[in-house]
Length: 344
Figure 1 (cartoon, rainbow, N blue to C red):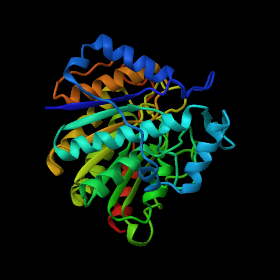
Figure 2 (figure 1 turned 60 degrees about the vertical axis):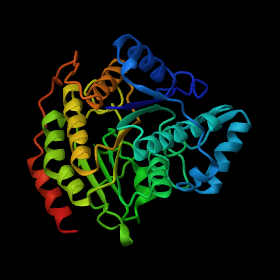
Figure 3 (figure 1 turned 120 degrees about the vertical axis):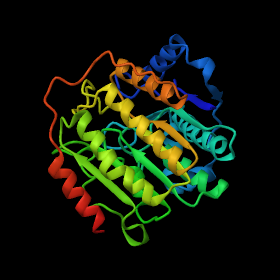
């Protein structure tokens, strides 16, 4: 078993007191050094994505906009809190390029699976718009790399970040060669405000977007049922050549930005389900790509658990335990979702 680790910490892409900063990747590297996992991993040095690779998923105007603001020394790119520094354009290229390089290794058989610990994150970056701390859409670039370079007919993307992957959905909304699945918190005034069950794709992409919009405090049981009853069967019907995972650890109950209610053991269960789907459907070809996660102890422990699973090790760490709130029952919601997606 060869498990890749791509590490692109983007130290130069950091805004003071911003939750998405290099503190996240610094903490991750320290945790990996102390965990004893690094000797078991094949470290792959990232290379910057070319402009052509970025143009597969973004407009030239967006790429040039990020480039020019970065050349001017940085600033805010939107009305929210998506920023660049003088180094951000090159570092965002490195993040996307690292994901593409990992896909090259997995699709060529040089590696079995992997985890791209990269930033800035990407799943909120749309075809022509940055948002939600994201500059370029790393997982989308990885999907197109598999298709354009390696001839993958079907790529599945599962996004379990607590926020809906609006950027990834936008890029593939009219595409039947990429199945996009997002399980996320969907509540009033919660970012990005889309990701409802009625959003299923358009044109030939109709039926290739599957959203699982959860209320707060669903917890381990509800997430597990969504994968068992809805996501797993849809992946089996699609039969992807590669499974990509937008891995956000902000659905944990102790994350400061959300309230989804997952525990680290719940995350580990989801991880093993996804690896099992990849083994059954696409020869084990699976790549996890880091998105959110802002409680650093949760983030570092969650990533370690994923790496243990990718290496085939039956090890799960959960010093936090289950959330103190009672879990929301999702029986009725899942029944509606299954009826809805089966009818479209």
